[in-house]
Image 1 (cartoon, helix red, strand yellow):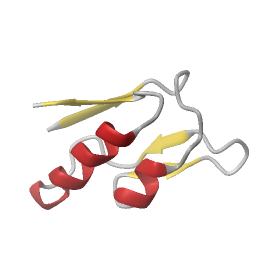
Image 2 (cartoon, helix red, strand yellow):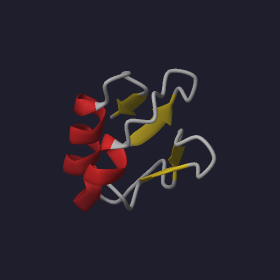
Image 3 (tube, helix red, strand yellow):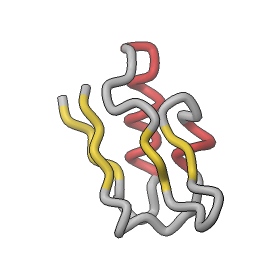
Image 4 (cartoon, helix red, strand yellow):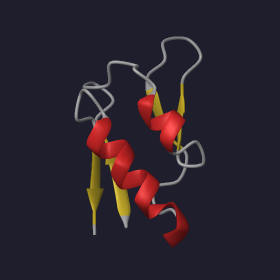
Length: 64
């Protein structure tokens, strides 16, 4: 798994951080998503897919 972000699309909803806090964080100043681990371990994959699916701005892309 490889994750990419389009920070310009991020609307700072924070749903990804709630679902996968080991993989995503938010910048303190504006809440824009920060990718902590672009290649997370297998046990994080389900949470990452859920984070991408619920992102209201479709800012998270998950590649196989």
